[in-house]
Amino acid sequence: MAAKKLNIKDKYRLLTRDLDWDFSYQDRKDAFPFEEFEGIKITDWSKWEDPFRLTMDSYWKYQAEKEKKLYAIFDAFSQNNGQLNISDPRYVNALKIFLTGVSPLEYQAFQGFAHTGRQFGGVGARVACQMQSIDELRHVQTQVHAMSHYNKFFDGLQDWSHMHDRVWYLSVPKSFFNDARAAGPFEFMVAIGFSFEYVLTNLLFVPFMSGAAYNGDMATVTFGFSAQSDEARHMTLGLEVIKFLLEQHEDNVPIVQKWIDKWFWRGTRLLTIVAMMMDYMLPNKVMSWKEAWEVYFEEAGGALFKDLARYGIRMPKYADTIEKEKEHVSHQAWWTFYTHGHAAGFHTWIPTDEELDWLSEKYPDTFDKYYRPRWELAKEMEARGERFYTKALPQLCTTCQIPMLFTEMDDPSQTCYRDTVYNGDRYHFCSDGCKDIFDDEPEKFVQSWLPVHQIFQGNCGGPGVEDILRDYYQMNVGVDNMDIKGSPDEERWKKWKGVA
Image (cartoon, rainbow, N blue to C red; front, side):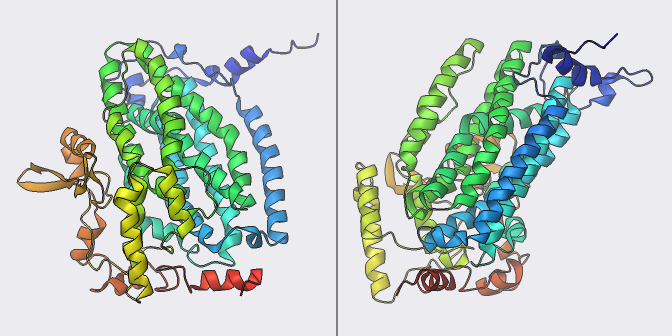
């Protein structure tokens, strides 16, 4: 008699839930020591549901098909000299930001989900984390392969991993994941699975992939599309995590709310670099950061938190502050990088007249009042051969590690500055949100490795800025950084395109 073919539900249970094991000579709590110390209470792991009901055999089949198509397009892109089709050499600097700042985070996510999945007593959560971990490893690999073609023709892409570990502004994304991975398994899932993957991921991936499409970069568009089905599962996992925790026990609600407040704030600070990329670094622009925030958080996120209100969850703390900051953060961030262009691993520049007009149109209430005069002055100085560079090192926020570049939202002429004293030492913050996070976990953040402090202590190479850039960051000074005008990147691109 032929064996009965299993339906999808039974097959899913057999290949996931039935992988659990019973403990005969060890206490189950000893096998999962991290499951209780955060205060989260789980009453029934069997309530965990995966809407995709994805099993590992199906997973490998789907991913293999995607890989075949992806690398075929990469080969075609390379064979047809795809770098000649980008809109402008300035665009490549957005890729430098992505490769040094975002791709290493995919690897951190791979490690984080692999570790976290091992700590859950519920087998459904373990299997889901295992597959997401493999997804994240695949993403960093496909991103590196997509951008390796550009490395043959442009500077500043060759040492991306080394730069992520050492360069001052890349301590911002690195500290974000260091914080998440140093937390417990449930906080990690709220931080990355929910707050970032579900609430904020569209503000990272959509602008980069849309920007790539608008600027002729089909390699980046391709790996973006290849990752989208993975991201759909990741977002579903993030939503399942939050609802599962809230439904398990009422005592979980205040703990989860505190984590949402923390990681929403840390996530929006991390996305400052995306805001800058959208408004200033894309020659062909998709939409403004302000428009993206309104679509992907205020509308989509607002609907999400209305849905979660029945569990007792409110909008993240300081969401109203971010609503005001959408008018300012991209301008303040790009000005900071423009004035520190000599110490960045990519080129900076003054927006063209057409781009200034675009910014005036997108930010009618703030740009002409606060930021256009600054760029007009910078343009006059550059024309006189006095291109402005900041010679001092910036003060950093202890929590997010971003330079103190943000202003008070009610008075953009004043820098936002907060501080707190802990064990006799004073710590500095860029915002109330970062100060709150420190005050809740001071022992964690007093250990922050702040690049500017380390430079002054002599831990980053020689005594001068050029020594640090050359010996510690391994940048080709004047080639990998400073203004794009007259750089090898621009000159080579003009030569390929036949531009005089």
